[in-house]
Image 1 (tube, helix red, strand yellow):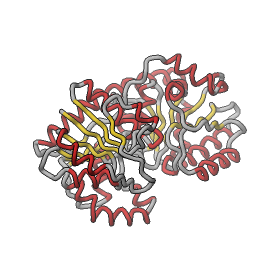
Image 2 (cartoon, one colour):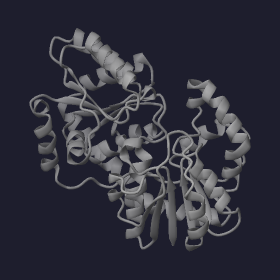
Image 3 (cartoon, helix red, strand yellow):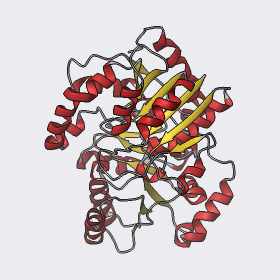
Image 4 (tube, one colour):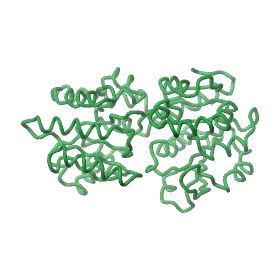
Length: 393
């Protein structure tokens, strides 16, 4: 089957979906399918080298709606080569272009992957933006989803929540697996890469947040909870590493200043975005991974931590929290100040033997639910099932 992925970017700095598109394409290739990628990155962008399948860079675009004049003509000219087209993300031009290029009921079949962008959290957290999205939904997006062969969700919780954002939305839905590739099998090399860049982390345990530094991630609550415990503890806590890109420098500086006020000196480390062996080294060396997010349709960094045998502390707003709790791969609490404080306290109370057992559970959880080969097989099955006019949720 020839499959075209359409996405704004495959640059990992833009978030988890960008990382998954390249890995998922490679996994589909290994299954004998023929995936290709159309993205709106600029030709020659360094991130394009990540793709191991044919990729077409049809940007650049400015921030915002993501209009790219080359996209629609390219889709009309090339679309006939494909059996299925998957649009990743909502609210931007790629979805419009795909709908205009590929008419409902005709080949290629069209699918939409919202990647959490229908979560009702956004309507409560950003009511003004939701008003604009409500208008866009009624004019454009509901037609894009309604005319698709299926709207693909990464878990049952995401599919359920999406129905609350725009009640009465008429589209077929399917739940597919989601995840990432097994990390390269060179754990010691990866740890050495981390310690070469950040030698201080080699001599003291640390807790890790890794992801986009954004207000929805609950980092402010994490800093407060860490500062409370560190101040009250007679023994030093593991250092807190907050790693990831931030699109708003003023927000990042605000968080750093807050951490300097409420946490012991030099206890919070801000390395910025980590990639390659340094990133995997951080995930492997961390005592625990923490994501107290207010909204997370999936949380690809959570799954990457599980793949590295690292237990996770997450909020109940990470939509895969039930699977993780059921598998004993981490701890879950509400996305409140009290909930984050309980997360850290519960972790501190766990004995070393239980730490080791949770590491083994983390690895089992990853292979059972989130390994990229299983994800690719799930996607292919959902495409065939949706093509028969059936909905899986």
